Amino acid sequence: MAAIERVTEPTLDVLDVLLQAHRDNREIHGWEIKKTTRRSGPTVYGVIDRLEDARLVEGHWEDQGPEANGPRRRYYRLTGAGVKIASALLAERRGGRTRVRLPAPRPRLAPNYRSAT
Amino acid sequence: MSGEDIVLSVVIPLIIAELGPWCDWLARKLLPWAARLRYNNESRASVRAEEWCDDLSQIPGQLSKLVYSLGQLTMGFTIAARREVRDARAAKVSAREEREEVIRTIRWASEMAVSGNQERAQLGIAQLGALLKSGMLSESEKDFVQAALETVVGSHR
Image 1 (cartoon, rainbow over the protein chains, first blue to last red):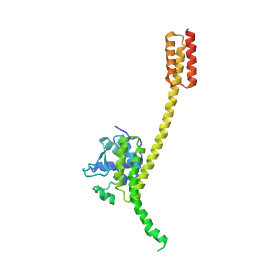
Image 2 (image 1 turned 30 degrees about the horizontal axis):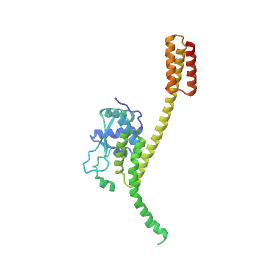
Image 3 (image 1 turned 180 degrees about the horizontal axis):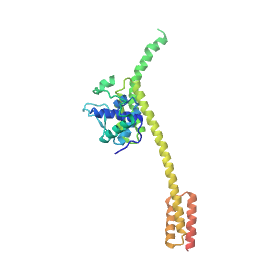
Image 4 (image 1 turned 90 degrees about the vertical axis):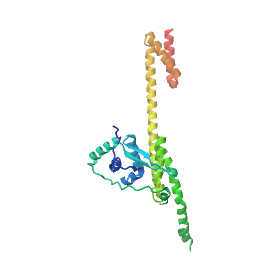
């Protein structure tokens, strides 16, 4: 089973969010993780890099229609090993308590609308 | 209307309105650069650059987009600088290890060459000759190996 090099507080926050998403049977993108954890973008993506390297998290691009020309969104989910490790780590370090609350999923807005807001 | 009023009511809003789209444009241009700086891995850099560009569409306002990009760029610079220092240190260690290996080989080959056993001496001489041609020796090491070879070969004649 893969291991994470460093288990920092931001790592636990990101794992917490990903585990909640897993329990809600949904996927979550980087910006949503950043907003939910209230951590900076570079910090969150650094954690995602490490989790991906350890094969605890896997990402995939959203399916965009042929008419879409904007950047794609990348969604993340815990792998089987990721679920086990995240549950164990959060139970050990935080007594299984959740520090971050995953908001309800919001539908993706059309790119034109999003860039105008 | 005074000149100051004109600046406050017309010029500054015009500048802000003009700079807004530039902030958005610049923010999108900075992100691929930030990703390349941060990652040594081209495919991951490309994934993150596109992902971060999508993040920009979540950020309200134009200046905030630029701030987000500058944050990623700063982290990119920091990580690239750390990587440079680490690589330079590793190269230094590697060069030192290579020198140590060369010195060990010279010593071993010289000991073999003067061992008194003909087969071992031939092996040592061959090794010293190979070292001399290898381009791995400094000038003083070349002089030493040359002198060792001349001595040993002379004594064998």
